[in-house]
Image (cartoon, rainbow, N blue to C red):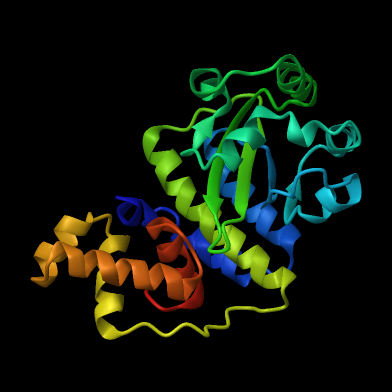
Amino acid sequence: MWRRRLDDTVEFLCRIRRSSTQQDICRHVLCYAGRFGATNLLAGPIPPPRALKREQISHVLLDAWPKQWSERYFSNGYLYRDPTIQLVNRGNAPFLRSEIDQVCRVCRVGRRVMEEATEFKLRKGLTIPFVTLERQAVGFSVAGEKLDPDPHDRLAFQFVAAYAFGCAAGLADGKRNSSPARLSPRQQDVLRWASEGLTVDEIADHLHISRNTADTHLRLVRERLGVTSTIQAVAEAFRLGLID
C-alpha cells in the first residue's frame, strides 16, 4: 500500500536524497508533511536513562522545533516524563498526540509537558517510533496547530520518516548513499514485492515459494540493511539504490 502512495512522494524522496545538510532534510520533510498541517519536526535516537542535557541534545538528528521550547524541555528534564517518549521506548505503532490517553496513563508532569507544548503551537502531533538493529529506540515527530493526517498520510509518512532518518544518520556518520549491503536476486524480488505493500503470504504466492521462505528472505534483508521492520527496509533500500 505504501508503494502505491509513493507515486505522490517520489519527488520529495529525491529532494531528501540530494540534501547535503540535516537542515535541508528538515525543510523537505516539512514541505511534505505540511500537506496535513505539520510545521515542526524533531527526530533522533532516544538517549539512555539519566543522560544529562548536553547528551540529550546531542542525540537530536533533525531539529526544526521551536528553540525556546527545546531549551525549556531539555533544561527541565522533560524528556523522561514526556508520554510521547515513553511510548517510543515501548515500541508503539505510530500515534497521534490525541491518541496518547488511549494507550497509556499520563502522569501529572507528563500532562504538564503536553500542555506547555501548546504554548509553542505544538498542539497536535504525529510520532513515528522505530528501532535500530541495535535495539535503540528512535522517535520521529512532526507537530503543528492543526495536524490532520488521514490513514494514507500516516502510512506514507512512516516511509518518508524512515527514509529521511536514514539519510540524516548517513550525513551524521559522513556516509552518503554508500551501500555495503548486498542482496541476492531473490531477496531483491521479495523486497520489491514488499515495497508494493504485499503481505508475506502474498509475496510467497507471487514468487511460488513457501511463506516460511519468504519470511526468511525478509528477515535476512532487514539484518543486512540494519533495520528492524519491513517498511524501514524498503526505505533504506530506496535510499541506497538497491531497488527503484
